[in-house]
Image (cartoon, rainbow, N blue to C red; front, side):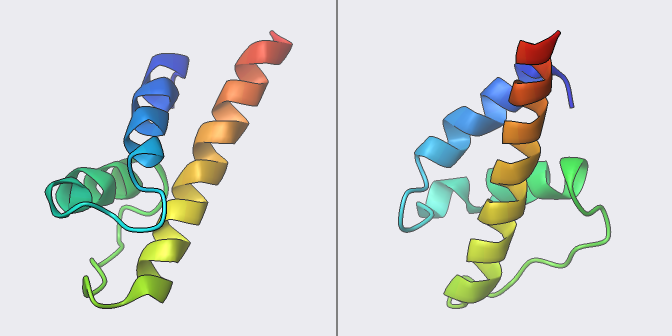
Length: 72
């Protein structure tokens, strides 16, 4: 994940505070598959726990990338 990609994903994540808007379900999941787990299957939209895991892991990946960029 590049710095630009991390910033782009972070912008998506900011829009998902509390719940994921319906129009962001696919983009968020696609980013998750790209950067975190390519073999993931999409959880039911009625499953907050599954989506909370996806958001948490994606957020960790973004923060790790942004923090590493600040060190350089």
